Image 1: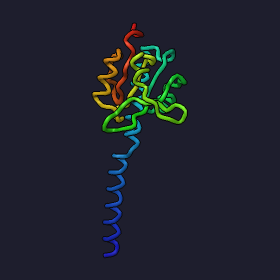
Image 2: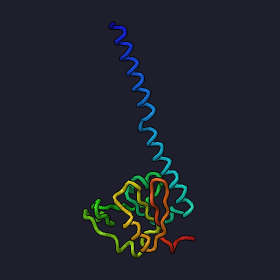
Image 3: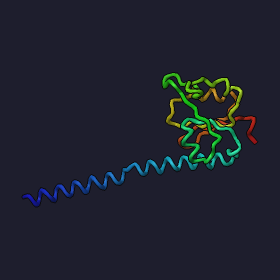
Image 4: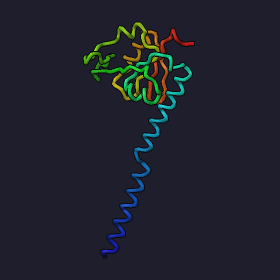
Length: 145
């Protein structure tokens, strides 16, 4: 009886282990890296290394694009997302800066607080929208070739 109980536990443990292995977060990490690779390939066509970039999660974009030309974009309110940047330890609304098209490329991750209203603002400011897996990318129309 003890042996049968041990074999049952071993079978359950093996089954759970195999299931966990098949649905492990490693696959999610791979997909995220694939999205970053797609973004990088897309931006290479737009000569991103010589452009001023604004991105939420800028530290991640800087790392993968190997660029120091990336400034951070923030939203302070999930219900009413607006464009902010941290300057001198304060969050400053940068909507006017975006209206002036200071940034040539804006990258917003799909899981951010920004919504369709925010995206429409960028389009109205003169940015062209591109959807890459995991990202919305906006490129200043005056810099398009």
